[in-house]
Structure formats: structure tokens, C-alpha cells
Image (tube, rainbow, N blue to C red; front, side, top):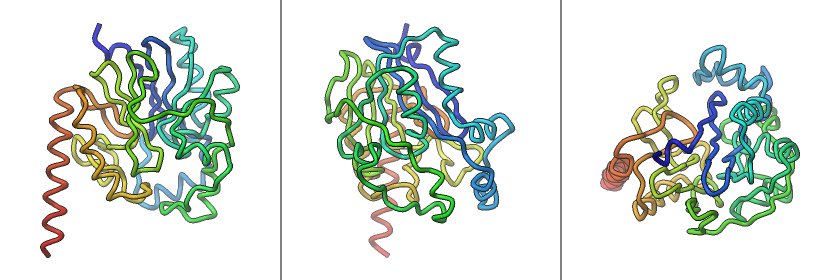
Length: 261
């Protein structure tokens, strides 16, 4: 079996979680808490399409039960949870799932204070304050600090890629599959502005430092992989490294053109 055959994608509306069955069985990210109707309405009025009835149901109900049902349906025994970064669409059900599964949580230390509730995250630039309050993550203790290039298991490597957030991570499985989190976006047929191409930079409105996030993508070219699984948008299952290289080159050309104006 190829490495990709050991990675399960869990669709959760506009975001995904993943389960890696390797040396250990690891849940990557925990989706979103239930999204109130007023927030869903705001996104629709802003031109952000939320999908069909099933996708909207994922958002209204939140990700917890969908993830738990997936784990039960596959008869999986989760050993640990890794969160790629602290944003609420990736940690929204973290506390609830950790308590249910009774497993340790791992993150990069630069994002841990936001998840544990010791620091407030920067204000949202996507939502007005009265709506952004709905995306607060229930504080959850993180048990394991992750470091750049650490082998979390013999077949899973941690890559710290600061920019989208300070502690933003990618995960490289068996030097074949790159779980990119929000470091890059896949093609988004519903919302081309978020991802019109097969691979796209992270959303500027959601990134701590967009310039750094884009610049640090070059670091990924130091690793071997054939497939990219982004948390938003469609996966890239062929020639992913070459396609990422092309995105980086195009971005560099656009930056240079902007500087010459």
C-alpha cells in the first residue's frame, strides 16, 4: 500500500481533519465548534458560499460528532492528536475530543498559549467582533511540544512553517504525503477567491504574517513528497512538489513586478 492509503480525510464543511494510520494512529486537527446561524448568514452575505446542505450541516452542528462517528466507523484507536495551528476551525473541538478519546495533544509551543487560554489571539480581520466571539476555542491543555524537523513517529516528521500563525505546522508522512494544514490552500470551486488554482497561498486575511507565510513555503522544497493534502480545498495527488515549486516561482515573479511599479 502507498502512504496515501494510510491517510483518512474527514470532510467537515469548509475544513478537514485527517487520521494517519502509521507507527501510531494520529488525529490531525479537530474541526470547528457549532457555528451560529448569524455567522453563517454573514459569510453568505459577504459572498463566501458555504456549500450544499450537507456542508452547511457540518458547520451548524460542529465537527465533534462527525469526527467521533468516523473514528468509530473505521474502528480506529487514536493514540494522539496533533493540531497544525491554533485557529478555531482546527481546534474548535479539541477539548471535547481529547476528553472523549483520553489521548495526549501535541502542538508547536508558539501556538500553545492560545489553545490553553493563557494568551488572547489577535483580533479576527474576517469577522466583526460580535461575531468573532463565537470562534473562541475552549481552553485545552497541550501535553507535547513539537519541534521543527522532529520525527514524531518513525514515519511522521514535523515541519514548522511560521507565517500563517507563529506555530504553524505541516506534517510529512513517509516522505510521500504532506499534510499542509493552512500553509497552502487547495482549489476551491465554491469560492475561487480563496483558491482558484490547484495550489494557492494561505488566505491573507487569516494569516498572522502573509509575507512570511508565503516566503517560508520555499522551506518545503527541502523535503520529498508527491501529494499535498491541504485543510481547505481539494488535494493535489500528483506531482505536488513540482506544483508547489511553480506556485512559489509565480509568487516571486508577482512580488518582483510589484516592487518595480
